[in-house]
Image (cartoon, rainbow, N blue to C red; front, side, top):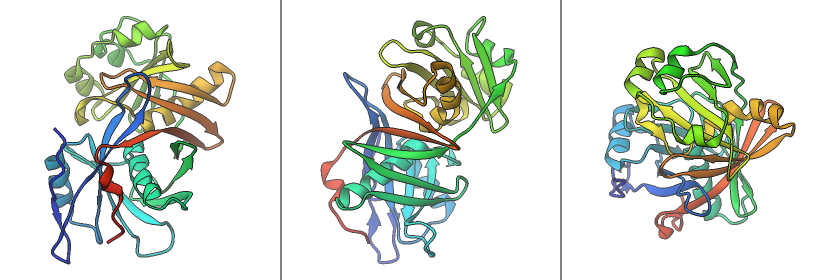
Amino acid sequence: MVRQAPLIGTPSGSAATPILVDVFVGPPRLLGNPAAIVEVPAWPDDAAMLAAAQAIGAPDTAFVMRPEDGEADHGLRWFSPKGEVQLCGHATLAAGHVLLTRDPQRQHVRFATRFAGILTVERAGDETAISLPRIDPEPHDLPDVIAALGLQIAVASLWHPAGYAVIVLPDAAAVRAVVPDLTALAAARGDVMAIVTAPGDIADVVSRVFVPRHGGEDAVTGSAHAVVAAYWTQRLGRTGFEAEQASPRGGRLTVSLDGPTVRLAGRCLFKHTEACSRGDD
């Protein structure tokens, strides 16, 4: 259950209250991926941020502060209830949505991150968009991953040394039917993100994402689409596509490949509409 109680004290004695956002929401009943945004005047210690993420209970919590230099507009770090995360696309999009909603004249926001460099979130009509670094996995035999996912065969399998496994299946029905053994998946590949993907039925592409050491199946995963973008744009013969993530919550994304980056656009909704109304600390 996601909580909204104040969790992290600030130097002024007040407490930072999380702002809750659903990211990559889509019709007809795609609920998107929840993220919590906590704005802080200075970085709390890691233990405090982890404790806050655990208390909030969202899949990922983004901590936002103004950086000490002018390299970006804000600093950004992500924590799941299990620990710090190196890249979280949906929580970054949520953080950008909070700041852009607060200032209607602002067109984009740049975040300095600890592991992923500078990430930019911008307006995209009624949606919000983020550009992530393109990640290109290579063809690779992955019998252990395929078996852990409860599958016999795959159309293709790809691997990236950062821990991304891509299993391509023949159709959307096969993706929706996957029943993974998460314990076996973690034993086979450790801290892996396993992406099962196929041509879609309600979108161009459908995927599911399993991260056994970070909560099991992810609701909607921006970074996973930075991994599969090159494969699908080449296979579809165009630079962009509509994507569905077929988790129990479900989500919808527009994916565009632009050289070394992947642009992801989607709809964000506040869980509490008053959350974006206050000014910066």
